[in-house]
Length: 344
Image 1 (cartoon, rainbow, N blue to C red):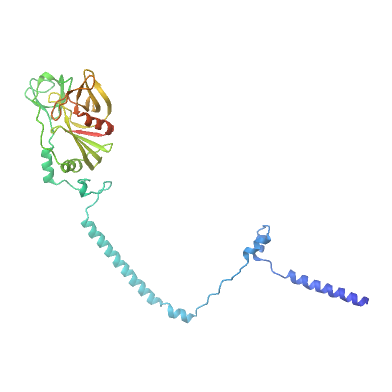
Image 2 (cartoon, one colour):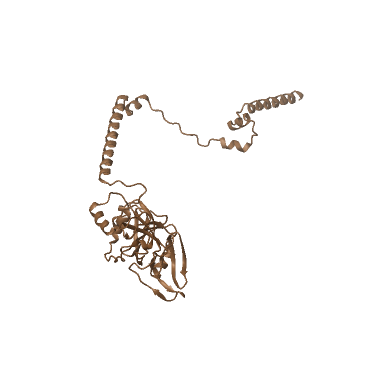
C-alpha cells in the first residue's frame, strides 16, 4: 500500500515538472518584449494591438522568363525615351512659337494700369496719342491767358511790353506778371488790360475730354476725383476714377474771374472748406484750392436768402469760381481735400 502511494506522488511530481517546463518555453509577445527592453511598464491589454488577425497574402513571385517577356529590353527603352523626348521638345517649340505669335498680335499691357474697355472710352495711356486727333483737341484746349500791355516802365519791365497776368492782389491793386523768364509785382495802374473774353460756346465731347486727360496728359490725384476748370468755356468738369482712367461725370456751368481780377491758372489741390463767408454779401459752400481762390455758390444778401448776383457762364468774379447753389453744394459734399484741380 505504501509503495503505491509513493508511486503516485512521484508520478504527480513528474507531471507537474513536465507542465512547468512547457510553460516556461512559450514565447513572449513581441510588443511586450519591446516595451520591457525600453523599460516601460507592460500592460496586458496593450498586447492585443500586436495580434495579427488576417495576415497579408503572400505575393506570387514572377519567374525571370515572364519578366523578360513583359519588360522591354534596355535598347528598346532607350529608343522609346529618345522618341518621347523629341516629341516633348517639338511640342515645347510649337508652344513657344504660338505664344510668340500671340504676343505679336496682342498689344502690350502697361503694368499697373487697368485694361482698356472700348465701351468705356479711353481707360489707359497704353499708346502714343493719335497725332491728328491730338492736334484737333489741342486747338480746343488752348490756355486762357490774360495779356496786358505795360503803360510805363515798372518792376523791371519796359513800356509797351506785353506781359502775362498771373494773379492779382487787392482786387487789382497789384499784379504778378511774367514775360519769358522774368517775373515780378507791378502796380495796377501800370497795366493796360483788355476787356473780358467772350465765353466759347462749342462744347468738347466727353470722349475728347477723357482722351485729353488720360492719353494726352498724365493727370493724377490723391483722391478718386479730378477737377478741370475750363476758363474759356466757363465750366467745372469733374472726373472720377484714377490716373490714366478718368471718367467725366459732371460739367457744371461756372463764373470765373474777370480779366482785371483773373482766376489763377495752374495745377492745385483742394485744401479746406466752409459753409459760408461774407457780411453784406455772402457766398455758400466754399472750397479753397489755392491761397484766397475758392469755388463757391453765387452771391446772396446778408441773410443768405436772396440772390444778389446769380450770373454764371461768363467772367464775373474777383478771381473765385462761382457755381449754382446745388452745384456748389455737390462739390462741397463730395470732393475731398487733396483732390487735384487743374485750371486752364
